[in-house]
Amino acid sequence: MGAQADRGMSAPPEVVFSTATDPDRASAWLPGELRIDGAATPEITGEELRARWSAPSPAELSGEIRVDPADAGGARVRFELLGDTGTADADRLATEALDALAREVADNLQAG
Image (cartoon, rainbow, N blue to C red; front, side, top):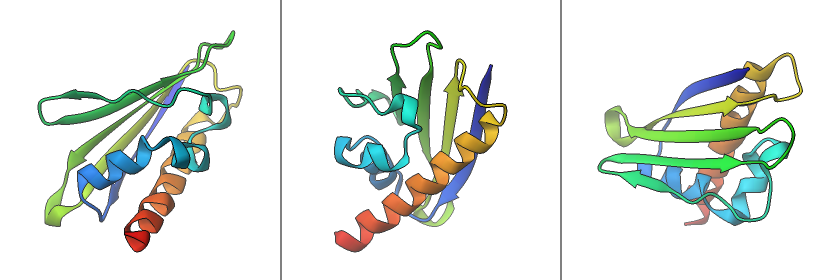
């Protein structure tokens, strides 16, 4: 079972990615099962900005984010949940996570 959500953000991809992988901000947007010690270890391949979180549990839940450049200097973000989310509406959970990330990105831009 898995779920995914996509959305655009009006911030540079690097800002979105650094906000997403910031251990101090992860608890504000990651689904509860993925909020564990040892934040994401970003996997950067060429132009790709990707990070993956895994929760050691019977459900073997993991989440992966990918941030790509979009028009006008913004970013296109995809968040995918893999494993048993414990909810029938896993797509909604993934969408809510990206909505929360967008709020964190906006806060990060205002703070900087």
